[in-house]
Structures are given as C-alpha cells and as structure tokens.
Length: 132
Image (tube, rainbow, N blue to C red; front, side, top):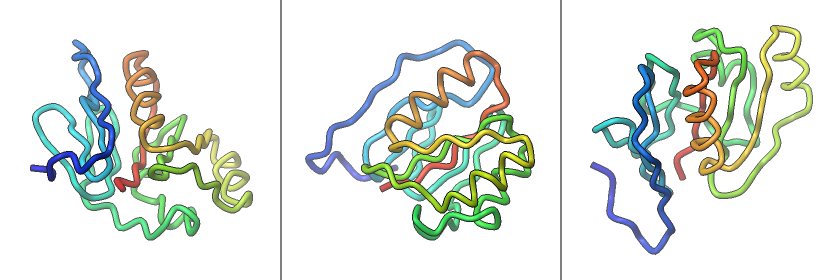
C-alpha cells in the first residue's frame, strides 16, 4: 500500500474495460494499477508490470537502464520523469529511433495519462515511470 497523500495532488482515472494494465491513479510516491499499489519506479505494459525498476535518475537514462522496457518490444516508450520533465541525452533518442522505438519524455502524471490512452487504442506502448 502506498503512503497517504502528503499534500500532493492526486490524479484519478476512470475505470476502463480493456484487456491491458490500466493506471488507475497517480500521486507522487504511489501508482495504482488495477488493485495493486506501487511505491517504487516501475515499468508497465499491457500484460506486464516490472516493480522496483532500478532506474537511477531521469538525467542518467541510457539504453542500458531502459533495457527491461525495451525487451517488451514497444513501438512507443513513454518515460515519466517525476514531477518535472527532464530530458535525457539526445543520443538516447537517436539510439532508440534506430531500433524503431519512439521515445516520449514527460512528467509522470502526463505519462500515466498518455499510457492509458495508447493502451486503450491497443498500441504497443510501454511506460517507464519514475515514481517520485
């Protein structure tokens, strides 16, 4: 169970009837997917949740730190960088483009919303979320 809201706003999402993991809510330090709550950094795809992703920091993102997400073979990889958008080294975008993977970097709240929309459209999307 995630800690209670500590003064941060919380996002609640509508329940969807799709056959994919759907993010139900997000507040810094707590991501709810289905009936499960996660307090660490996670990777989520339609049928996979990788808890306690050892990601380092958003500024230090690399192909190696995203390896677990890339193994899920996304067309689109969304990275949620916490409460502030933090762009990684531009080399990372080029490396992923060569693999045929689109990379989108945004706040974790925006990444949760975007992941849900793309999952609902049955796109091959993976979200790597810094949960802070």
